[in-house]
Length: 288
Image 1: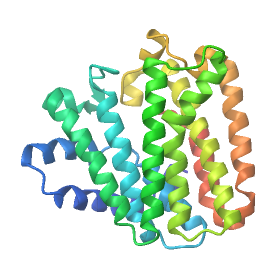
Image 2: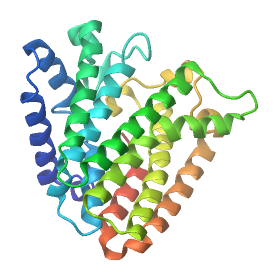
Image 3: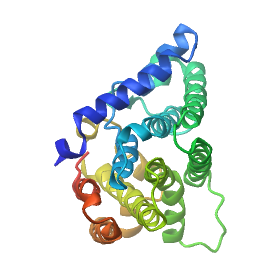
Image 4: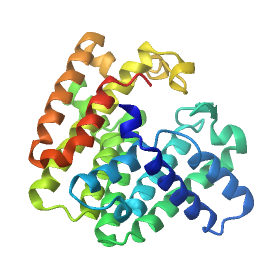
């Protein structure tokens, strides 16, 4: 199933587009090296693949969505670089290699994250289809993601919100917003009609939450070597996670519920959703 979802051809197209944006940015050599370290040659490229698959699902060529796909991956990479900094998560390893601040220093890591965000906006504005709407979607999702990071690390909730409500707010913003955006911009690049766009929007919302629930579960059930990053830190820091709020067994039930609802959300797309159905199954069962 993984080979079906993570098409080598699609991955190569995404990587080439990312490389082109980095190499054409005109950054100083040391900044370009740090940006490349953060962005290129690592990760599953889930978010840009979602963009391409959603474009495909509404009947368009994935070539229409490559710039949008690159944009959402750059935002993701920016968020990882800054999240890994000592002032936030202080992580030393990302995707099986040293984090940017470990490899290049904190100052360069901050600037590399800034550069990635600027490149992401450039990529969004380069989209051949509805670039203004694509840029609007990406900037909105980025703002929501940053707000989610604030909720997760610094708080800011109303005193009346419950732990489950706070967890929902964090994950809808911190993780869900960018995954939902990846799906929405893919549909936009494909010229989706209203019903198809609504189905993909709903699906993206559900898989965003499911992705984070699985991530939280892996954080307490898998080793750092297996998942390629530090584990157990959220639990040690007392952060709100699915296992912390629901418990492990209830988290598994919540993942099953989200999977079922996500599969149902794709029904209006008919056979066009075949790859998205496979993505749903993969994300529900992944182990890293």
